[in-house]
Length: 153
Image (cartoon, rainbow, N blue to C red; front, side, top):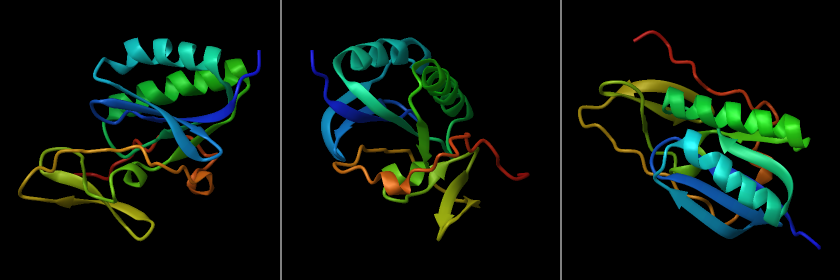
């Protein structure tokens, strides 16, 4: 049985979790889930690995929720090693129109040019992420380590 070659993108920084399947850079399948990452990711990826020939995994490596990033990274890194499929990362600003991302309290992460820093906003900005219709893999990096770090607050 022939399986189509695809790249799979995961954005698991808030609820809902978003998974996009991209064929030649175009979104062909979209999965949304409000379930916990640790419970739903194995189910989603099992089905996708049965259905497609996966060329790469890509995920939003932060900034954002420490636990969400950690679960996504450990899951995908393990799967990447086990299945010998390369893992890439893109920053979360690629999936929210470069809007501020909540850090802690009234602090938010902002991206100015290529630098990510924290800024205080009086109003808390709720996260909203979207899968792009076209995936630009040139923006992905093979340094897939999570962006956990945040300066002293």
